[in-house]
Length: 112
Image 1 (cartoon, helix red, strand yellow):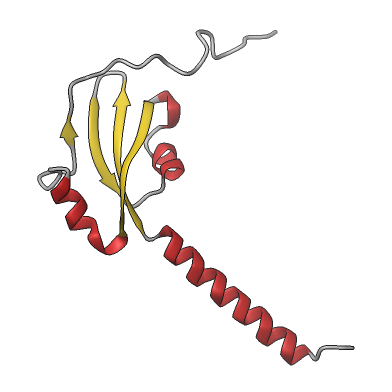
Image 2 (image 1 turned 45 degrees about the vertical axis):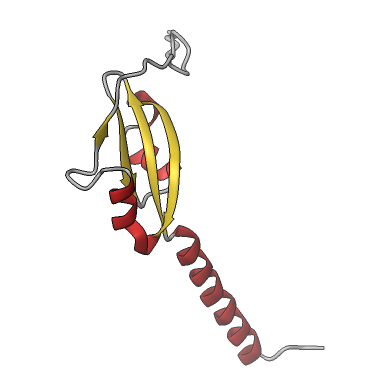
């Protein structure tokens, strides 16, 4: 039983299109975060998923604690901003709550 090259190409193309659509639907979210750094504690909204948000904002060196408060569909960004009073500058300062660092006291090992 051999498949023709045309059938294989058609099926491969259909699978690629379905994967692109699936990724687009899965990534189309708005996340409302509660972020704690060394000096600040605030809420913000972003279309970046948590791992990308953490990476693009300095990782665990800068962000000590990151919590996803809520998620909204992509088209409801305005609703997310309104619900959490983030309309002015996409940031809502909160009372600072110190969080212990999740890294060891000596994160670097020196060797000769």
